[in-house]
Image (cartoon, one colour):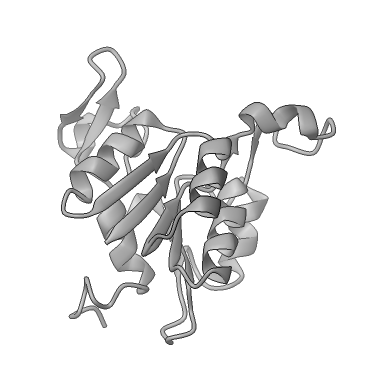
Length: 179
């Protein structure tokens, strides 16, 4: 499959290389890159983080229109844009639905992992806590360090993008035994 992965975390992009090694990947770390790729190219799937830094878009936003950390839920826009083009899209986020209004609203469509099991559904939402890599991104050595969950308590969650695709229910050709 030809897959577009959008995430501002270098570790999560490296995780995509690891978990989706058998697929043709295009990796984007900025909103501008992702927009251009989705506009100019065709993909079989789009996998995206929910919140990303505005980067070059920041000057276009009015004060107070984004979270205090300088991010916006642009992954939702990319997922909708992909779905409108007929491309299955999965938002995979480590945001907490108790703290983040966007996740709370997405939860209204179903719990933290949802998709509608019909041929028309092209968009899914998955909590990264349900699909993680056994390891963490070590910024010092610029590599994924494999270790069990209990040894990475204070490390950020690293997404297992293939597992997120499975949780979404949108890719029966890759997960034929999923009920």
